Amino acid sequence: MLDPLASLALITVLYVDGVLAEHGGDYKPGGWPFLLRWTAGLSTWVMNCWTSLYPDGHFHFIPQKPDAGGILLHSVAPALLILLAEAATGYRKYATRRRGELTAIIARFDSAKATERETAEKRAREDAEREAAAERAKVEREEKSKREAAEREATRREREEIARLENERRAAENAAAERTRRAEIETERERLQLQERAAEIEAARRKTDAEIEAQERRQQWELNQAERDRETSRQAELTTAEAQAEALRKEAEAKAEAERIKAEAEARALEEAEKIKRQRALERAAAKARGTSESATARASISAGRASESGAALTAVPALTASENGVRVPREVREKQRDEAERYIAKCALSGIAPDLERLANQYGKGETWVGDRVRTARRRLAEENGFEASVIADALDVFEDNSDAGAA
Image (cartoon, rainbow, N blue to C red; front, side, top):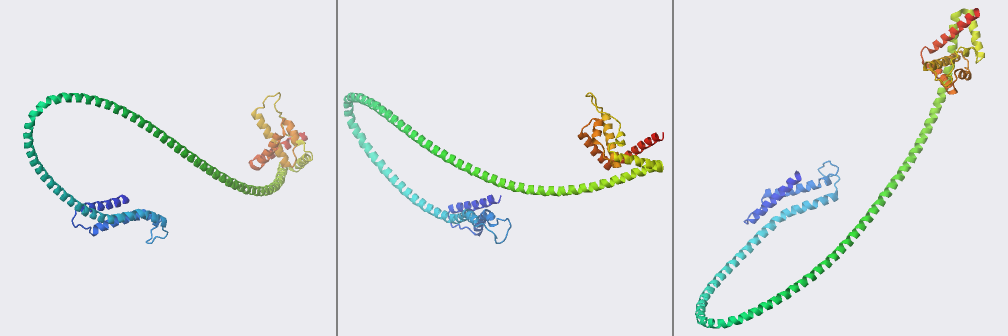
């Protein structure tokens, strides 16, 4: 709204000064019109140059970082407008005074011409009246002779009129033929000019198309070159990033390997401690259940199991076979087989006996993968499942009691 208001104020003061100057007189603009002109002009200049005076958007009484080029560029139009506003008053006064002088000269000239015209008209009327009187007298004298010669002249004029009409007809035909020929010549000339103009336009169009095509090819080449530069830079950045990532990966792998070795050592130490603890717990439980003599027999049996890796511990596993003749084993049976195999491996682990994995696989008709899964699952259950270790120990004690009863019998 500010720029239109400043422009409207300046246009208003210029228009009012012009109207008052056209009315003549001794009108001289006072202080307010002068102030209004300069305020409107300076407002326009400030609004145009504001961003150049304060490009950072912070106001200072004295501009800190002005844009000299922008100030010069945006100051030309406001300066011309202010000077035009000041010079327009003088121009209008001179034009009004000069127009008044010329109007007065024209008025005096028109007055003299009117006077001369009236005098000439009066003199002409008087001469006309005298000539009319003389003419009437002359006409009256000649009227008689004219009537006599009229008949003779009428015949002659009729013949001349007929000859004249014939000549005019021939002349009209010749003129029409000449106009037609000239029109054809002019039409042919215009056609040739149009052809030449069309040829010039076509040549200019082809030249323009060639220039546009060359410019487009140049721009496309520049774009392709820029794209290649960006791709080269990106490939270099990717290569650097990959090298850094590879170095970080190797460093992480080295740290992970060290941590894994450390964890395995700790796990082996914990496993040995757990084996010793479980062996001692199994021996204590056997001692409490049967007393001194039965404890000695149990230790002898366990020692015999240690000496033979495929001894009584494996015979404790029921002989559940796999499917026969391609019949799928039920899910409950498979789960029972897995549980019994895991308990057998847990018993061997608690007793310090190495399980006979090959015989275990043959017993259930399974492969090495299945047996390996049972070994890992048994170790995980011993470490994580609450009550599994106690259940395995209780099963071992029950088997021991049954063997003891059978020996007593």
